[in-house]
Image (spheres, rainbow, N blue to C red):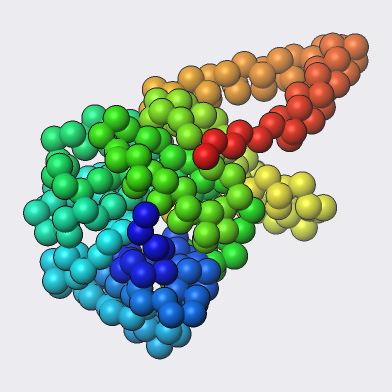
Length: 298
């Protein structure tokens, strides 16, 4: 099997996630003695490239118009773009990938890849569908951090065309940069569950902020509002694309949430303390069970 410390890594999009991946590779893989691998990065902003280069995170920096010069050098390429932009990138540059290269993504929706990849891929390259479940609220390379991945979960969606040795290498890679759980599933299951655990949460946090009638209400905050709405400091273009790309599954989760909100509302209005107490006790038990579930597949 290939040795991670001797591979060349390409990062397409040096924002908060691309930057964090590059930093994790530098700290946990290429810091090893006698490592020969390099990190190549492509980004529209030259400021991010300059910062990453000056910090010693990136070895070779390319602007978007020069990416075709970078791609053939890379053994593993991370495409850290929005979902549809990722597909466009694969289509535009499919003939430039190094033979035997592994290409992967970070997108929050997967169904669109499962449908489109067979018509895009070259037989001598391998696209592994993945989703690192980590990150921060603020955007840009300046806010990237290798620590985001420590003890977090990584989702892989293996496809029939993936080579077993490449999947094994990908598992070793995500473990090496800090992830301690690897969940493997199909794309449809990913989109349904992420629609609940991530996208619905962002909708709820955003709706809560929007529902505030008094912008100074946070003067009365004690932590609950802040905890619930941290993720409402949202990247609007990205999350708009994610919501719409997963609209059927997300809408189903929203409807189920609305039903529960209505149940709480009616129990409160009716002063039905028994029903409300039972509902809250059930909530507590469910949440405790959720916290104990860990799915690990390697």
